[in-house]
Image (cartoon, rainbow, N blue to C red; front, side, top):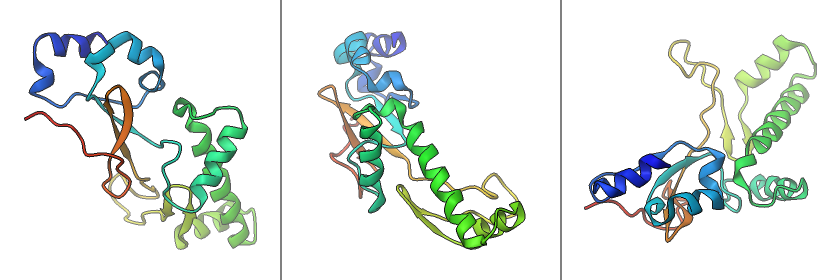
Length: 165
């Protein structure tokens, strides 16, 4: 947080995009109280923002999240990711007709799955970092008037990003 304040003090805020890696702290009132107006226009990558709809399953997952007592506190988003993982494995077991690990892997490799954050399809490219990986959509949020707003991807954006001239 000190770096954000210092960037403002030395005039970098008007010359560069200030970004932060998603961390529960950036989604709290403590962040706003610590950095104040210096925290405005900071862009944060996030996995999810309650209320953002990727598929028909998203609102269901948001409701479960709230029922667990988390409200709209995105710092606990990992619970949603775990729910999605459990649903994915359950569907793969159903498609495989077995709990045999090889059958489950085959089901995961040969099917697409609709999850709360989009269509899940594992890469079968045998080289590189994406083999057997699924890359979920990534949200970018920006503090505008000290309120977090989705600025990317365009199809989910609530507002346009405010960028330096």
